[in-house]
Structure formats: structure tokens, C-alpha cells
Length: 251
Image 1 (tube, helix red, strand yellow):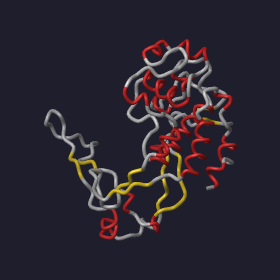
Image 2 (image 1 turned 90 degrees about the vertical axis):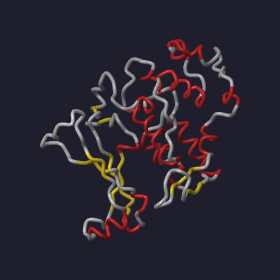
Image 3 (image 1 turned 45 degrees about the vertical axis):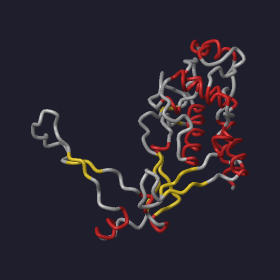
Image 4 (image 1 turned 120 degrees about the horizontal axis):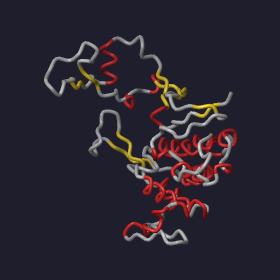
């Protein structure tokens, strides 16, 4: 039986670590730093129940680890939204900024393998660029607006169904807003932006950062792959086998 994941995104992909289990505590702390604790308190001031943790810790910064502690193996986790392809659910629990437009617009029979493929496109962009494609956008109409700006006007039946479209576009799909609406808006532009990386031991306030630039060759190949995954018509999106055979994976 074939299944769809239903919640495929970067936070549900883990990288396997190696050679950490046998390290003495002082060595482990020298690699990852002392855990930062936040003590748990009740709103009422009463004692915590026995089942409650006494404190929480911020996740360890694994970017501090050397290559000897990393592997090229990953684990896909959290199959709570998974479903048999032959029996799709009525809706999905994945955050909206990983949902394809056919689901956002409430099309019939929209939930299926093509949803995972759209989410794969979002995930590949986010892993490569270290920033979500639809960053901090959780409103359905704003998401659809970004999609049209990136990928053009959707099929006419979808376009007609989207009631809020006239707030953002004319009937040809041209952006109506002022300001940054004049600048070029494409995956190629998004992939050309510098990737800011915080160095081990640095912080996110500008210290110990460097910027990485994706090469022109990779920008072109990755944009080609993503445009295929982000096709509006679900049946035109590539299969997983076609995705894996794409030239971007051979770089």
C-alpha cells in the first residue's frame, strides 16, 4: 500500500549524528555548550504536578559540531498526518505555507501525492536558502498572492474562485500594489540572494556571520526543478523518480 506523508517540511527531517553517545559529559558540553534552562512555573504559583518537567532546555546548536559527528543519513519523522493514497483525508494538518494552491482554494479531490510534491519544493528551497519560500505568511489570500507573483496566473477556474484576487491583481494577473511590486519577482531572484550563515559560537545579531552565494549554474538548475514542482496542475508535477533524476541532484 502506498502512503502520502501529509506533513512534509524541514522540521520533520532529522539528520543522524554519530560518535556522540560515548563522549564524556565534559567533552559533550565543550562541543555543544552548557544547556540553557528555562524553569517551569504554574500561572497560579502552585506547585508543579509530578508529571511536569521542572525545566525546559533550548535545543543544542548542532552547527557547532565538526564533520566527524555528522552523517549524510536523514530520518523523515512525524507520520501523524500520513494517509493511504487510496483514502485521502478531508483536510491536512500541515501549516498553510506548505500547502499547494488547489488545497488552499478548496478544489475537489485536491489532497494526494501532489501535495507532498509541492511541500517538497517548499522544503528544498528552505533547506538550500535557509529561509522559507513563503516566509511569515500564514493568511490564505497572502499565500495565494505570493504564488501568483512567483508562478503567474493560475488556471481560470481557480482564478475565478479566488474572491480576493481583485485586491491584488488585475484580470491579467498583473500585480497592482505599489512599492516593492515594481521589482522582479521570481525564483531565480530569490535563489540569487546571499545566504547568511551564523558561524559556530556566533549569534544572530550580526556577529560571526558570513554570506554564501549560490552559483549561477545552481540557481538555474534549482529554479528549473522548483518550477516543475510548483506547477499549478497537480498532474503535471514530476514524479519522485523524475525529481531524483533531475540534474540539480547531480551537482
